[in-house]
Image (cartoon, rainbow, N blue to C red; front, side, top):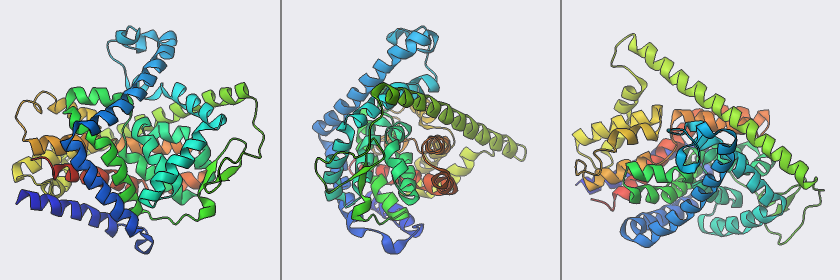
Length: 418
């Protein structure tokens, strides 16, 4: 019976995305169907075979290594911000050090790859393959893989040339997709607190579900002449052309690199400011609600709202109510807060296998209120006012996208773990 409820839950999550679609007539149903079948297969593969988990972990370890290299630059300037394992003196690293300052290495590195033509080549060919499978535009397909390991702000930052060349509706799609990722550099921290196998399973499942959900919520037709790859010099190459070179002139390398580094620094300040403001505003709302009743908070209110969706995961009423509270806490704060609460009990047998799987998968994403601030901040540092206005007006759709992807991922993985 619970399995049937779980299946119904997956259908309901998809139906909600359809219900709130901006243009139901433009939904690419073939793409939705193909990606859904692919995700069901992957959910089965990653929950039943170790080889799939090894592939994901290997790629994540590669990016984790890159972040550790970034810490070497940070520890030179700010040794008391980095922990001893990386050469510093800090007892623990704050959010700015662990998540934002590595951007100072990641962005210039990818900009260099763009400058020499490597990244556009990867975008064209990886995007072409994924687009063939999913039926999605080539850059959106590549972006989904890019943010699988880079994270939302990093993927946006290294794709800034592309973002500037695309129309606002496509940028909105990327903003919505960005709610459903994680940063590979923190996978190690996740796996220390919750079951690692489900953390690694959630990463690719989330990305494909982001394609499904954004296709339903914000379907956008992309003409062949629009499906282009941005290049240094202000021109673009058609996705149907092979080996074409930019007609624009490249600026000197070190001038370009200096601009890239300064741009990364500016992006860090914008993101940090938005995160601080959004978290503080959420705390203010909690304080105001507490004046009416000490129990009232955004977490509790959202927990009640999320209860039906938690029950549709195939949980009994008691577990569903507890699960919904965790969901509310994650949306208001972040996944680390919830993982910290459950880390001492989730691997002790206090939770069923099904509960452990769906809770871990649901938590493994950046879908929360503060992430909207990060994404808006990232876009403000990259695109023009018209693009920013559209994204800012659709914060509700961004949150809905992130929540539906997390629900859909947890529901699909839950089908195979009992």
